[in-house]
Every structure is written in C-alpha cells, then in structure tokens.
Image (cartoon, rainbow, N blue to C red; front, side):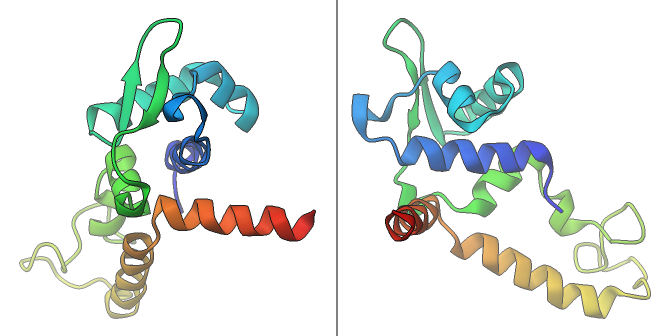
Length: 146
C-alpha cells in the first residue's frame, strides 16, 4: 500500500527520533548503514522531509539530520503525504482519478461506498500514529526481547 519511499521515510524519521546523542544529529551514512537502506535514495527522501520542515539538515563534519518538529506532532500522515502526496487518499481505487469523495461531479465506482469507509479508517490511523508513539513502541519491544 505504501511506497518504498514512504516506508523508508517512516523508518528513518523514527530512527532519528530514537537517537538523542549529538543533539539528535545523525549522518546519512550512519542512518543508511543502521537501517540497511541505499544511501543516495535515502538522502533524497530526507532532503524532501527537510524542505517540508519535518527534519533539519546541516552540512559539514558535525552535520547530519535531526528532527525539526516535536516527534509527538509528526504524524505518519505528515510523512506519507510529504513523500507521496495525497493521491493514495484521494484517488479512486479502480479509476486513476480523484474519487467522488474529492470531486462531487464524478460518478461512484462499484466499490466506492465500501472503500470510502476503509480509506477514512486508514487516514484516521495515519493521523493518530506519531513518530513519538513508534519510538515508544519500539523501545518497549526491545526491553521485552532482552
């Protein structure tokens, strides 16, 4: 359902939020190595998040990426729409165009009513899940497995 770019972005932002040392600044190579993600592709994703004021990017020997916003206020929806736009939430499943929910002049597709409920549930889920909640959840899981 989510693109690889969105998945990488969520993983990277969660990773950055979980690293308090160095004022949260982490170099792209370290992020890439620890998450086993391709560096050039990840760099483009993180720069996009920096342009949208989710991350801070600083250059130089002590540079890297850090959170620009409070992790309690960064939702998964923020990241997904920054990376992939709103198409996943606005377009019809059958027709590659805006859904009737977005454009009242469109005819309903055969699965509109069912998918409308699912889509709203997905939007609610991504809106209610924050980076903070992912970090907190991951930390609990690590403690359990020790």
